[in-house]
Amino acid sequence: MRDIDRRWFMLGTLTTAVGGSVMGVLNRLSRTWAMPTTEQKESPSSAPRQVIKFTNGISLELVTRNNEFLGVGRIAAGNIALRSGRRPMFVEIRNPNGIHLCNYTITQQSITDNSLELQFSMHYSEGGLMEWMLHSVRNRYNTADWTTEPLQATDTVLWLKIRPVTRNLGGRKYIGLSYQYRYQSQSIPIYKILDRGTWELGGHAVGNEFWMRHSFAPSITSVDSVEQLYSTEWYLPSATNPNALQFLPLQTVFQGFTFTAAKAGTLVTWAKKVSHIRSLFEKPRGVDEIVHWHEHCADLGKELVTSPIEVLWAPGELDRVGRANAYEAVRELVYETLHHQIGMRRERVTTYSMIEQWDNADLKRYTQLGLPKLLKAAIERLDWQTIFRII
Image (cartoon, rainbow, N blue to C red; front, side):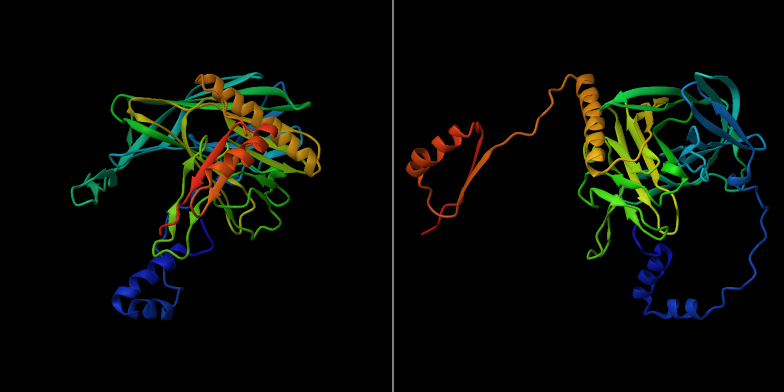
């Protein structure tokens, strides 16, 4: 997401092809025309909420509207909000055949002060673009009856498990929770579950500092106003199609975890298992929230279990050095855990040397003068890049 109105951008693209007349007409039209009336649904922010409290001090809200489960609302550690709860945190599930799941209802639940397990039934609707492609490199279209109301997905089940968590990292005590989804269906295979939520200390993005090492945005970003924009998307304004990359691998391209610091403490989220997770992190303009999107991916099949996502909070405001030390402690936990799971040796940062010459290489000079100095400095790796002059 970047500072651009996508709808008017697309209209502008259209007018390029038709000589600008369409945009001229649209700009002159009054925007007070009568709109069709629709049934007004209760907004998620005003929907009933059931508060669940765990023994470690974490509390969360279950948000429902009539019998429909909307998601997890505000989550707090004592009096400190870890997320605002305006947008209930829950999944979006679509499959490549153009089937969308909706109207989730709790059919079974087990709630204690040390665990929460919910089982859901749901409906499905069918139609629209598929993800499958034609030979013409265009999407197939699901031509189902568009007047059909959502139907009960009789053989499809979703589970949500939440557990309290306590950890000690870098001499600081963190409390939080871990959540995980499991999906099963005989008739609606899927290959991804989109996990949608927002995480902002104090319930507001303003005043938070977001640490994320990657290529497309500053590694440390302070949110100073509601109008501020931040996104890990690669948006390239100079390109004809400026939308380069959106969701990126969490555990390879990104650092494998999120780290947010504020006066209210330190907030960390990370996936506890090595998994194919594609993520996007945004602070939209005009919104006081930091949005976390995670696509939990797998092979197309009848069951999908997401990696557990762990959310941790530690109290106390830290200075820049304290934040860097806390960040490093989290990084060590994440890297050591994930490498150990798959039996991979960690690649440590090491010193090395580079010899680069833009004319004929003087190998005698390198071996007599260069290499002894490098060995004396305990440097064991040498990269050699020579571009020979053409005569």
